Image (cartoon, rainbow, N blue to C red; front, side, top):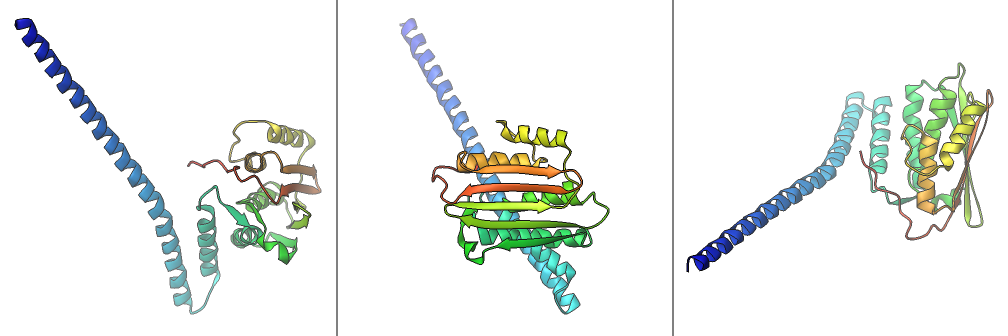
Length: 252
């Protein structure tokens, strides 16, 4: 009889411990879910809070000055860039949206660098509705500015040429900056051809990686440069990327 009672007690104790463990796991799971929901909520609130704050500052600047001014223009451009950049990374964009975002970026940089550079566009207005990978033009303009023109003594020029040839979109970002030394150019080309993650500081390598992931190897990116003359980055994008190709989620 004692063995039976002992067996029953052990089972009761075992059941109690198992239930307690399951309750603890469930409680921990609920806590994690709540934490994830909170983080998701924060990720939704913070950008909107930032957008609204910038819009408020913009209107205050206009009201204090009585008219739109340089500060309000910068705030409006920054707000537009954030709205565009902080959207879902897997989204595509129209060429018109890409151009508008790049114009906002250039507006801010021309003030920052006291009109040290000029940017010229060459594209067909009818191509504005074409879909392409999001956040493609601005990093290339940034690369031209920071690595080509910023270090020049005199002012520089950046030209963006975009044209469609059948089912391919051709994009070229050309600058008359300091150019790239042959050794470094060879390194960049090697890094762009390698698999793996690239540093966010290397805009060209990051863009090459994103193109490969998004278009499944059907897009091309070439970099041409001569020291003292400038650099040209040329891309060829298919206008009908595979439906199952998506950009990777980007972390902070």
